[in-house]
Amino acid sequence: MYQADRFDKDGNKIGTVPLPEALFVDEPNFFAMHQYVKTYLANQRQGNASTKTRAEVRGGGRKPWVQKGTGRARAGTINSPLWRHGGVVFGPKPRNYKMKLPKKVKRLAFKSALTQRAKESAIKVVENITLDKPSTKTIKRILANMTIPDGEHILFLTAESDTNLYKSVRNIEKVNIKPTGELNAYDIIRHTTIIATEDSIRKLEERLSK
Image (tube, rainbow, N blue to C red):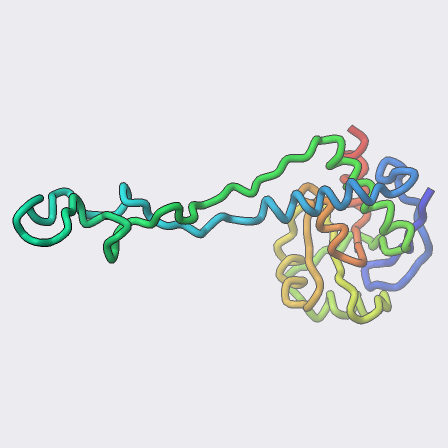
């Protein structure tokens, strides 16, 4: 069973707390994590490159000039790829980069990422933080008290969406915040330290115990 450092609302360490076994696997599966990251990033891509074929170019409804007698080459439409502003032959079209992973692989990647962070002692549990109004100074003070090394990419994990907490965190460099319901394996892999509220750990256990 993995343990995590436990902190109070001010960021002072008050002991350790056992983490639920439902969050972890025996050993991290790095192949599943790699497949998840690869799929996640591919699904963020958009195929934007696009050209018009001769059928999509505007105009070209009538023959530019008569077939014979002008001394010029015969032409049937101004949309021809041979003409300036005409259609493009075999040009790029938007491509679908979507990839799919089985649910079991997604779940394995999620638990593997959590297991790896737990092995690194990178999961911190903090008492539930409630702010009456947004205060970046308060969050900075809590992080300073927790003595997290500089340069760490931190993810604040909350049980539910919290507007005041979100507004307090968003201005701090390399610190992000997410509710448990939106957490995915990529978030865990991308951030080197997870700071989770007590309620968010319970929510995460409920989610992974199903």
